[in-house]
Length: 275
Image (tube, rainbow, N blue to C red; front, side, top):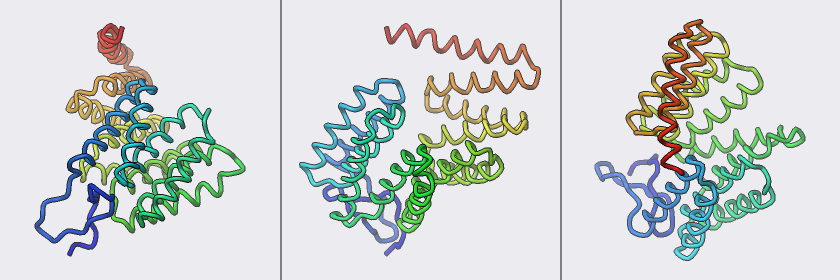
């Protein structure tokens, strides 16, 4: 039996599966797949700025997962709810209760991965508070110990990306860059494109800050190509603007204006469609 299989869970109880070599990778089926699709759609709604709709879908996913005793689905929905709340920081007590429930789920279902995700999210909330920072970093590092033990490459890469962001904020750019490049290597290998988009932008931004403009432009171009492959117009606009800033720093003003105008030309029809 394989000892280290990623992203494979029972569609009924959420327990991690270990399958023989040669067997096709497990994919959620039936109601479990429907719940995971609902959670993913909620994430996409949030990215598109429709937070209320996203929260409504997540609340339904939590209720339905509880009815089915589908621990991983409930944990994923609660985790995404907490991530959305982090943008506003006006319902922290409720976010913490969601995380408390995730810790209880992890213990009841005997699923360490849920504990790791809860630690990761709590760390993200807590290190914004100076008095909680030291303990938050301990939680963040412990979460990755769990991710690596569980063989979950998606969350391991998210840890490297998140820790890289923390170090970027502290001005430790080269240490941050090493972590972000490590995250990108994993995300490239496993085609974790939804996470890769933000990792590439963070790498480009660091190169911009340390004035390595050619490398910044290289990664920003890669991000735009990824956005094109996904038909992700919002991300494409972001990279157009990022490239405009980089080119402006290189004193390539005409090229920078072209990028800014390109972003505007994409945004204008998007705005009309939303009205």
